[in-house]
Length: 111
Image 1 (cartoon, rainbow, N blue to C red):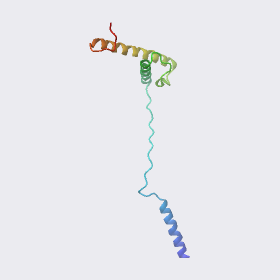
Image 2 (image 1 turned 90 degrees about the horizontal axis):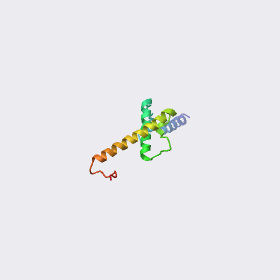
Image 3 (image 1 turned 90 degrees about the vertical axis):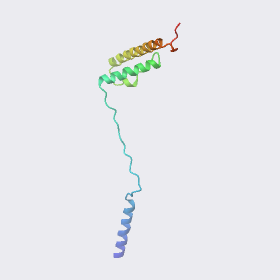
């Protein structure tokens, strides 16, 4: 009986030892969750203006509000859309003036 108990105890110990982790197993990967920092109201407004300017550069009449404007009040979105259009216009005027000042520029048709 004593041998049976010792054998049973040894078998149980070996079974438990087999289930324990060994040095060969790889550790579980660490998952890092990164939160997007909150923008101030002015930063969010400027991000929306920049997104509208980019949309206007890509198309003459964008029909979809950029995702950067999500969360802004309707009045703020309308102002950002107008400011984005004005920003695009200023950038186009500057590009035209730069081209006219450069004799090698051919992007503007000059009669």
